[in-house]
Amino acid sequence: MTKYKLKIVLATIFCMQLFHSTQAQEIPEETSLSKKEIRRQIPSYINLQFGLGVSYFRDFATSPLFYSGLTSHTAVSRYKENQDLFKNYGFSFSSGAYYNVYNDHEAVSLVRSMSLYYEYLRSINRWLPSSNIDWKVGGTINVTSNLRINESLLNNGVGFEMIPTLFASFRGTKDISRKKEVEKKIWFLKIKKRPKTRSLTGQFNIGLVNSQYRNGFAYADQSALLNDPKIFGGYEFKVFSGIRAMGSFQYTRYLKNHNAIRYSYTWEAYRTGDRDPLEMVHHVLKMTLLFNTNNKGR
Amino acid sequence: MKKITLLLCSFILLIACESYFLEPDLASTDPMTNFEYLWNECNEKYSYFELKGVDWDEVKVRYSAQISEDISEDSLFNILAKMLIELKDDHTNLVSNFNVSRFDITRETSDNFDFRIVEDNYLPRNYYRSGPFAHDFIDDGTIGYIRFPEFTGTVDTKNLDFALDRYKDTRGLVLDIRENGGGAVTDVFSLISRFISEKTLTNYSRIKSGPGRNDFSSAEPVYVSPNDGVRYEKKVVLLTDRGTYSAGSFTSLAMKAIPSIIQIGDTTGGGLGLPNGGQLPNGWIYRFSISQALTLDLKPDYENGVPPDIAVALNRTDITRDEILDRAIEELKK
Picture 1 (cartoon, helix red, strand yellow):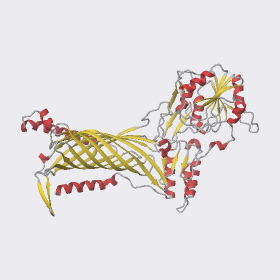
Picture 2 (cartoon, one colour):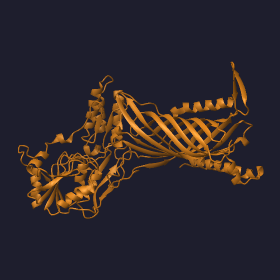
Picture 3 (cartoon, chains in turn brown, orange):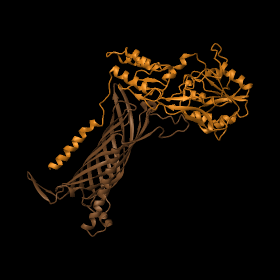
Picture 4 (cartoon, chains in turn purple, blue):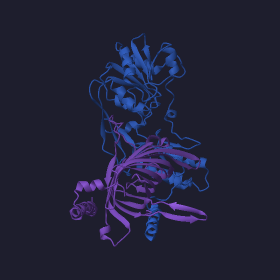
């Protein structure tokens, strides 16, 4: 690890710590509530997420060709957000059949992916000029693993990799709620538009510490030949290797009972940093059901 | 609203940067592109150039001269296939939707096995079948014969316990792995563990670890521990031929470390390198060896075939006798 890379990590950890400590110092001045009581006021949700997407990947270790396919996504997470804080942790699962059809040859790769993630962002509006967008920055830790099965690739037919990443995260939320009832007349119809609580959010994560746990140079593993079969025989862990970014654009509609529905588009791309890199891109449309767990609405 | 538009535009811009994560599409049917790709993959990852005495750079010059832009797919396939056949390795193949290339080591010598001769002249009509093993008594019940045609990965404790227990009172055992083309290497160790009484170092193995011709991992020892179930520690004869390949050759290599086992027949076909698998830019599939199995004196020579302790050939003019099996019986009677 170079000194420069070490500085980036330390700076990220320092920034995240700063957001924690800044908030902790300000609480007693703004309110007489205890920290615990303040935390309880933050709307809290359990998210159930479903999505469909288009994804493609290429693993240079086995093929120079792209594989693409339709993928299904599900996720469960615990989520808290107010104007000061955004915290979300959970896991997601996606699966799909990825095809390469070229030159009258067809190959299919069945891919199952699982991610564990933790996101923590704090508001930075106090340092910005007056804005009606709620800006937050922080960090995300995401560990994604892929299991890929492609029988066409013979002895290299099974691929597995783990991509742990520490991201810098940026999030902007615009409250687009209709505060008052509005009456509109369209031709001869009078339409009453009731007050609605809703928001638009954009989030972007850029990998600061990209790492990978992947097959070694030969890709296949000789542990079975050594009479000592290992699941991850010959695997190598590399830190500060590769690039990764994620982004999402979300529309959230809050209901009277404090639950919410969110429609979102997410994009994710990464490339490992080894000699024969794995490249993967996801475009996913998602619907999320947010079940409020503390009866505190926005 | 401007800020929302700005946010949205930034997001779209970021997605447009997707090409930063992806290198250009390399799919191509261009003959020279595919030739170069395959040659280079082998150049960096194939494990037996030195042993096979192949000058891979010279091979490139010779075969690339045969490639032109308007060459047919079939002709390109044949050129690439011939280039791979230079490696004389049956773990090396090229697979397309119209042909599969192979070296076919068995064609290098005459055929030394016909199970019908064994069935007709040595085994009873309803010989036993326990999992992948065909077996019974031969030579008036004094010797056990076990035919193991393929390493299916299905060798289980019950099969072996039954077979070995059945022949525990014989003078010796014949284990026939002629024309056994290999399969699951786990079966090799299941089998060997029945013929040893202590933890045994059988061979070493190393795998390619970099693009240089001699970039290998360190040689790692292969140990086999004795099985807790039924073991056979009397004299055993292992029958091999050129069709004994891959896991079959591993068995022969490993059994060289066991003094009570004698190998009779022909040299095995080799195939001691672990094959990989990959795709060319035109969608064809290739595979070749990427590891080396080493003898106890750390030599890779047995890739060219594990030699028998006693070389015997089948006389194909006499379909009533299996000379190799006869020689095994003779050896066990000593």
